[in-house]
Amino acid sequence: MKNSKTKYAVLGVISLLGPMSGYDIKKFCDKSISFFWNENFGHLYPVLAQLESDGLILRSHSEEDTRKKLYIITDEGRKELKSWLVEPVEYQPKRSELLLKLSFGNQMQQKDTICMLVAAKARNQLKYDQLNSIYEYYLNNDDAKKKPQYPYWLVTLQYGITSLEASLKWCDDTIEFLNKYEGGK
View (cartoon, rainbow, N blue to C red):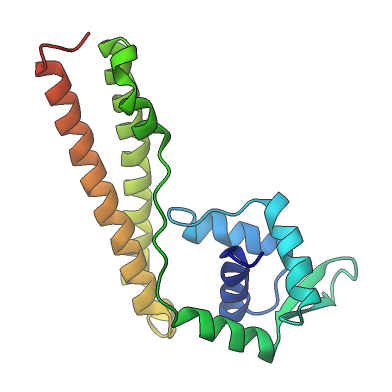
C-alpha cells in the first residue's frame, strides 16, 4: 500500500464528510470524484483494514445498526493526509482503451474505428452533461457555497468539464480526419 493513493482518497473523504462506512465511501466516490478517481470494493476494504491497523482511522458502529462499521479519521490520519497533500504530484499516465485501440487502428476497418469514436463521443457527451449539471447545482446552492471546500469542488468540476470539451472536439476532429484520410481502410 506504500504507493497506493487510495489510502489518501479514503482519508480525504472521511476527513471531509466525517464517519463513514466502506459502502458510503465507495458511494461518495462514485457520485462525486469518479470522473477522475475510481475505487472498487475489492481494493477499498483491504485499504480500510490497513489504515485501521496503521492507526490512521478508527472503527466504530453506527447508532442505528450495530453491524454497520463506520470509520473515523484519527489525528495521526489527519497528519498523514496533510503531509501527503503538500507533496509534489506524481506523474500518472492516463490509461485509455480508446487510444490503445486507435494505436492499432490500421488493423481495423475504418468504419469500425469511426463507430468506436462516435460511441466514445456519446459517452463523453453524457459525462460532460452530468458534470455541467453538477457544476450548475453548486453554483446555485447557497448551502454548498458556505462550505470551505466549495471553491475546490468548482475547480475540480471545471477541470473535468474542460477535459471533456477537449475530448469532444478531439473526437469530432479525429472522425473528420479519418474520413478524409485516403490511406484509411
